[in-house]
Length: 114
Length: 112
Image (tube, rainbow over all chains, first blue to last red; front, side, top):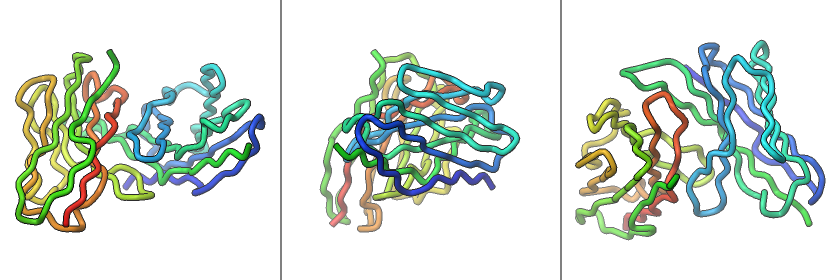
């Protein structure tokens, strides 16, 4: 089945860049997503990239996709304390019953040190 | 309006109670989802509704019963739950079954 892996924890200093990595196994992935979850809250869709793109930039966020290695990364420039949260990578893969299953990664907890 | 709302925010119920979780969106999305999320884990898909019809049931026990009264509303009826059902229940919606999903804030459920 599909598998999406992330490192569990990342700690950075305020003002530095953060890079959160994700690997996936489903070669039929069409879209890949990054979600942010703050404590006690739902998931906020941050950005997403189509599988035929290599890079997408959106303000402080840069997504890089290496489809050959099935590796996705999220770079946050000038990381702020408000960026502290759990970040989930997710991939949309095979179709079943008109629905393309979304598989979430294990989540990376980002801690920003002031 | 890009918001998915869920009520209640918190719910404590006994194992013999019957309660319902509610979810609403006014984005014109035609796919709606229920997820269950345990602490420090990713969300797990429970149900998918597409055009108000149940299209996916991920082998969820019958003590969870979803309902989609119209294209904007999604309910999850709960009956005879177990303590291990305590979790954050998230609702999401998307334009259709292939579009990005937008999540609500969740209902924190505790079963005593």
